[in-house]
Picture 1 (tube, rainbow over the protein chains, first blue to last red):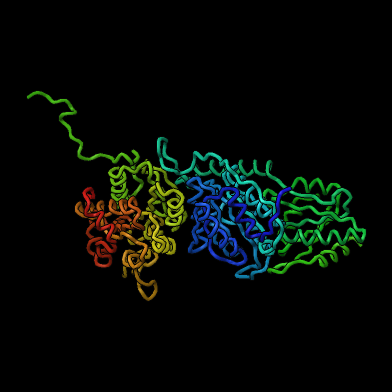
Picture 2 (cartoon, helix red, strand yellow; picture 1 turned 45 degrees about the vertical axis):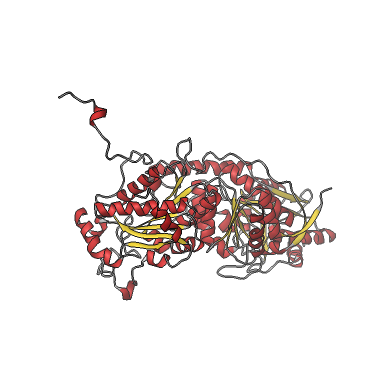
Length: 349
Length: 266
């Protein structure tokens, strides 16, 4: 049996990145992810790897770009306002096909907001966020174990598709402490013949997202589109709980999912047939599984820590006759199981 | 007299540097960028670092710098080249990344990145081309535009009350302890071009010796946006830019001074 270690979510991401052989970390302090940066400041030098505390989140994302362009597994971690600053860099990286991992431990917004947990950056993560046509693979952990596992998966998917991957926990998960089973470290890294490592014994490599003539750039964007299609076909991940007999299905991710789990147990005890559908990849969104589910179930309740962002993707996925309700919190405030149960009872009574 | 065969008759005095691609520059007639690129190419040849050099391009007229060199290269977002180069060097200390940036890129939008690369003493090299104008976008005011100078966004001349004062980059950065070599040169005469090359070479040698941040500012003509003829642009540079931006070495730490004395920086 694997030994379990008690660990905070933010630390689990750091250790997951180290297990995934992240070779370079760049970050700027922002709450509620500071423990992550602090942990990396000790652990990366211990492992003989690169750590730089940057002058801004802008510098951090551009250092990630440079490190990843030169073939290294690289990561930056931030929280909502910092993630906004990184959108430019993410657009360049998607355009230039640079694989890297960006962690956004979401807090309350808009603006400076607050340091509570929230999910208000959903659109920003899954719809692009920066300029131009692109998508970022977005993973939503809902436990400390998944913070570690998805940090590792994020590096794997980034390299597989040469695309940035977003790990999107919220502040509550970042601070949560739970037992974690440590994973074996990654020892074999993929070859990156495209990387800029010095033009020794080969033609030079160039990394860019630019053409003087639009006619020359369009084919590149068309290739990106093909890649996003492959991602949609191959990488959808989700979890279904108690769906077999469910009359009402909640849709939730992250810490909202944890509250929904408790609410579901309370509802079941009261005899209400409630299930949960949890998207794990927010992009690619599990459109087909939800669509299939709505052939059978007609009542859905979206639970989210934002004003109604996840619900838009849920609505787009479901059949026209499905009824979709929203129960939410926002602005950095957690949602309680009681609030969710109340919403369930209102729908099912 | 017997005819010599061509090999005996010809001595090559001047040719394209080996590290440069056989492609024409995209610059306007009389632009200084072509001269500066060539100097960088000559230095890469002479230091035999083509296989280790990484051209970190910027945004502006130098946007596709990497197209002209036979070394690896990449684009960086506007102003961020020093951050990109920092990461490449930290991850691969054997590589020789250099940024090639204009005045808008380095001295306006990228101020934080260059200042902090210097403050950290990153072991990278920056070629900073200052033509006192935004060239690529059509001649708007740059952070280095001179007072009373015409630009398309200061059509009555740059007035300090409205648009502040030109930034002297070398003077500012040389106060930072992480900088090892900082010099300002120009390319408005053959003698100036030779001096510019020496400075660029010493900057690269500073990096090769792991001595810290090196930066060479090159005052360069932009006849198109200055709206003067190419030859007159060289005179305009001497008359107007040199008083505001005095040439010279602004930072030479002892170890770099020792390098300079060694043979081979000619």
